[in-house]
Amino acid sequence: MSASGLPFDDFRELLRNLPGPDTSALAVARERDSQLTKPAGALGRLEEIAFWLAAWTGRSPQVTRPLVAIFAGNHGVTAQGVSPFPPSVTAQMVENFAAGGAAINQICVANDLGLKIFDLALEVPTGDISVEAAMDERTCAATMAFGMEAIAGGTDLLCIGEMGIGNTTIAAAIFYGLYGGSAVDWVGPGTGSEGEVLARKIAAVETSVALHKAHLDDPLELLRRLGGREIAAMAGAILAARMERIPVLIDGYVATAAAAVLHAANPSALDHCLIGHVSAEPGHMAAIEKLGKTPLLALGMRLGEGTGAALAAGIVKAAAQCHTGMATFAQAGVAGKE
Image 1: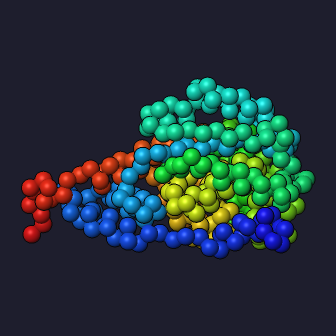
Image 2: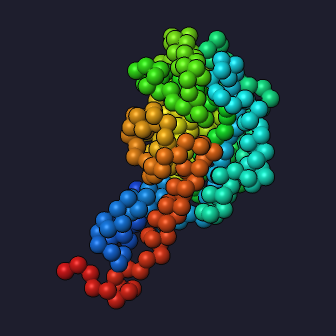
Image 3: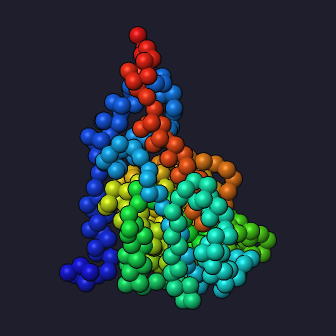
């Protein structure tokens, strides 16, 4: 904890002093790319991904220890009837992840990705944001610090995902609090909300943002009032990855909400991140555009679990392999451009 004793102070200091890219490694990668057996730019965005890997790892593009980190939390706002599923499903799905039975498990197997699951006090939901703050500052900061431990043990590509009944309501409130508009702009079906459930979800987001409105100019204060444990932990993981120069793939609507908090605190905070996919949640593309990003995939998915980021990891791995494995014109004996 900082000398002032305020839990968020250490995070504010980190966000003011973020490391930048390795320009020397980037230059080396660009030079090698110019010699590979292909027309310049022929691999399109794959080339940019390889450069991104080089810039943020400080070495030749490669992915040898990719990791999907799923953070699971429960939310008091589910008491407002915002989801067709009960909060108990969060713990049941965590058990399913551990047993290898979820979609994310299959995608990790297909793309040879590591998987870690973090249970964030599921038996203790956060406060109902429509009547009180989700967390106090100490709890939020401690949860961010816990999220920072996701990279312990080492990884060179971190994929961020989540699980939490009610958390698309939380994400919508964060985006509404950050970007304005109306609650309807940001609230979508999530796990299948429709009719009266969807109406309650919209009302909960409207009420929550109005309740906390006077405190939303500070992104970390917004996080602790409108967020959730998995949101705070994902923000911590993204920040830790930046400090350790680990590239990050962000998953869907909820994971993007965690990233958006960091971006609001420092617009350069997500330079080491790519958005894995745009989900079917109606507000996701609008949020991505606010971050100045372009998603790698658009498959109509809205599952969460890190599934979109994990699928995108396969593309990142392919980009690295193309860069490092392709022959140069000289090696292949192929005539270059005259």
